[in-house]
Image (cartoon, rainbow, N blue to C red; front, side):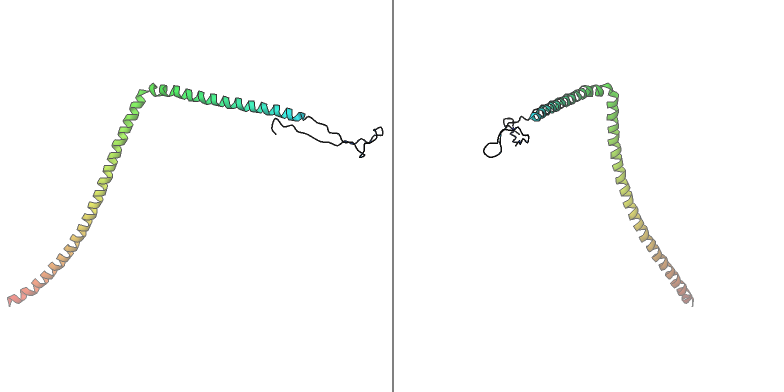
Length: 155
């Protein structure tokens, strides 16, 4: 509810005791009474306390975050400067890693070339083996012809 608005409560009160004044024209008396809502004031004060508490906690979080960032900024150069040997070692390891990566690529390339050569040599061997069988068969045929031809010549 807005701050400028007032809450109005209405109530009807009927008295049953015998010493009431005589009723007015309608047989009953209606009076309008403005009742202050005390709980509203208490709630708004409590609500303000929680708002102040939330604001203070938010500010505290911002201050802590700033402190953590400040400590990190302050300590980062000190950590890096504290051990220059580590920087040299990291540099050396990176150079070795690059060198080994190149050697690995070269070895893979050589392995592929050797596999291709093996395939070519296997194919050439199979062709040579086939030619050898054909030639052996031809030699056998020639020997057979030669044997059959020699006896005819003698006669």
